[in-house]
Length: 202
Image 1 (cartoon, helix red, strand yellow):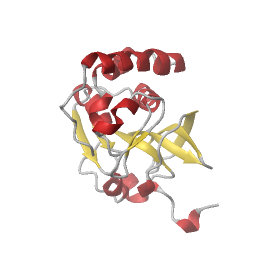
Image 2 (cartoon, one colour):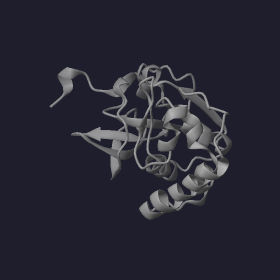
Image 3 (spheres, helix red, strand yellow):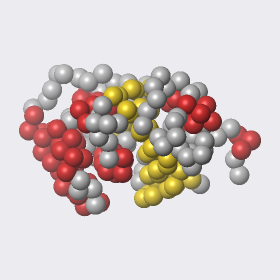
Image 4 (tube, one colour):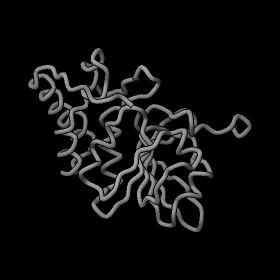
């Protein structure tokens, strides 16, 4: 995870970029939920990437981070929040893609927030009993150790890789199982910890 950098460039440069992100990336793609726009208009994406990558923080594509993680494009976060509709009753686990940006968006909106790495989550080490799981990247599948740790009714919103295409996907645990339904296509970096084993590929 990239620690937020408090050495800020002139505010107007990034304030303008943030407004442009809202108007030209989110609204034009149908993300108009007031709570989504409010959070994404005040959390500075540039603080979650290294100094040399700040200029790319508001582009319409993911920013790869030096440690192998990524900050997904703004549209993915907007779509994910709009679909999840988190509230103060939710106990949320964020499976972080390496930037820390998604937890920062969520923190004031939910009752409890736990952040875990993709590797720990894939092994079922989530340290909480969430009502909502948000995955900050695209996965090939939900590993059984993670599904077993989730209670009935737990919602999941994530990116999903299917035949090389990434889409937003949603699911809810019911009857001990948790399937994912793919929704809108959107570019999002893949989380290798959630790749299927080689023998499962077809």
